[in-house]
Length: 103
Image (cartoon, rainbow, N blue to C red):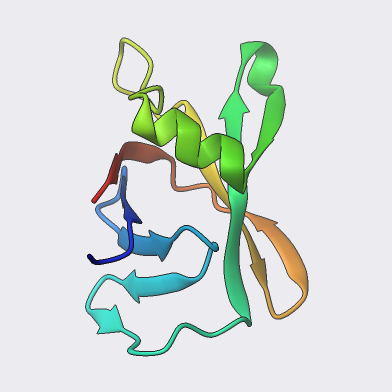
């Protein structure tokens, strides 16, 4: 049985494939056979009123994706944004998530 993964598509069309440990396995056409620890997903942030961002860790993000809670606003604007750790730097990706599925 293959390990479960999270498939993410952003508003600008960027595609990611992430394992449940947070390792990025695929970024658009770039695919890695062996995940590396220098770039990991740490969770998501949800945009609220007045652009207040509330962070969720990776385990909560996986639960939310599994339950179909990663959604957009009614006007189609992203509500969730990917958080990552890249070579020791914490980042918030400002290209919002429009779809997140467990594959």
